[in-house]
View 1: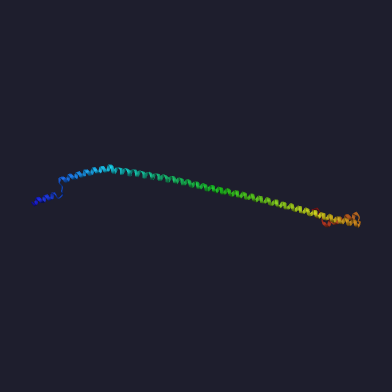
View 2: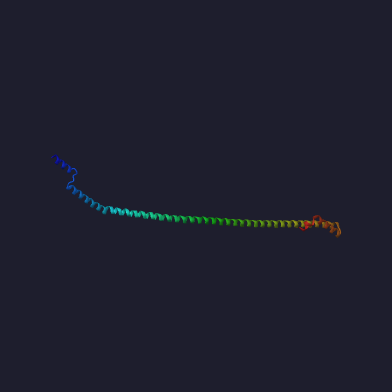
Length: 180
């Protein structure tokens, strides 16, 4: 009996009876169908969603790379235009300097012309003043000559003496004063 109990205990030790084996096989089949069901209805949509997301990210990365290249092109174009604007500004400044120098030269030339006109006017005025002084001196000489003539007439001097007196007076006054 002991032996029978031992054998019975040994065969039940692993509990490998037919019912257990049938339950295990049914459970494996159910797990297989459950896995297939979950794979078809759960895993495949998730895989598809992940694949679409992967494609979307890949597209976005490609778009970002394209945008970055376009941005680099736009930046290069911007820098080129900025360089052109700098050149244009330099040309405008050079033109303004050139026009400023031309205006300066024009103003200096006009100032010189005005100074020349002023100097010429001053010379003309000086000439007129000189002429006025010469006319006044002539009037003085005429007045002196008239006075002398009156004295000569009073003294009753002959004409030779009169001419000598006039010549003497003119020599005293000077030819340069008379001719000026």
